[in-house]
Image (cartoon, rainbow, N blue to C red; front, side):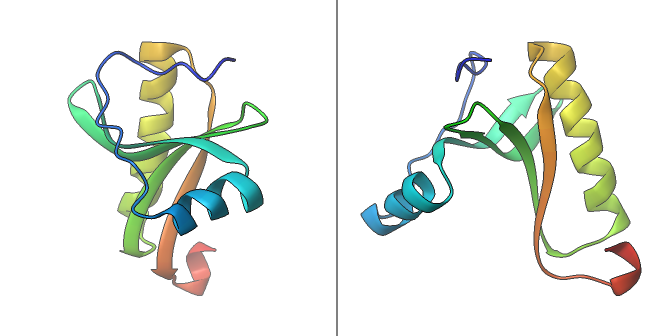
Length: 100
């Protein structure tokens, strides 16, 4: 799939050149959309990599059941609205070992 994303986007730039360089060189990320509205919800972030892989991102302080459910729901909504197949990704500082 191409790097097109839905009409409404709150795409925010990365905060510094250093962040942009890390994303493009090391992580091969070419687009980051934050607080992306889809249906009645806002996805924390949608990432597109240079290899055309999409990620639906949920960001939480601590991994929990709600975050797991949200990323699954957002992945389904993104496919339902935009026909984009995305991998789920949860970014957190800490996690209960039972959830990993």
